[in-house]
Amino acid sequence: MLYTIVGNKRICGPDCLDKIIERDVTVYGFGPNLEQEIEEVTPIGTIISADGATGELVKKGIFPDIFTTDLDGNVEAQILANGKGAVAVIHAHGDNIQRLKDYVPFFPGKITPTTQAKPFDKIYNFGGFTDGDRAVMIARHFGATRILLVGFDFVNARMQRNKDMDVKRRKLEWAHRLIYELNPPKVMLSTP
Image (cartoon, rainbow, N blue to C red):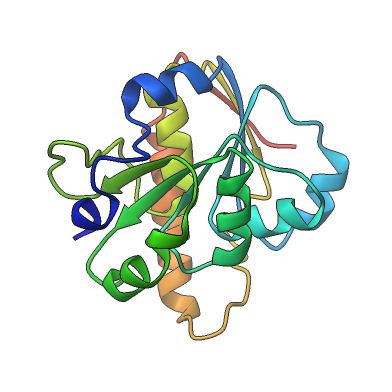
């Protein structure tokens, strides 16, 4: 369905992402410590934000180069960032079909459609489970050798309306495993 909505226009495929992602990458997560760390940490290289973090960056006038989303964060800020040149890595999964239909047509810039299932044609799978670890996996996939994590908290989940916090904490445990335990030795992950 995402493939149908996006069509052949506006696609930023692997060649496009490879030109954007530098060896140094800063990934912004939507942890409860994000606002403080935005002020305290100097980003390096390419900036990739994860879903809700994009809205916080945009509030401060910071536009990422790329953001990952399954469209359950501040979609208006994501559409704005996309219009300012940020590539929207939009993820399709079983429970965001309506959000894909409602929002994807309004993204004016380049889009990279992704899935957790088998990729095909112009639908990609670079790995990952949550928006945050998908952002890290994309950086790794395209050769980042140093990844600075800002606003990541794998223990204390940000309270979100309509979210089961136990489920969120389990997702964060998986994100931690994907980022740290399955980390290729050549990638150094930094946290402030």
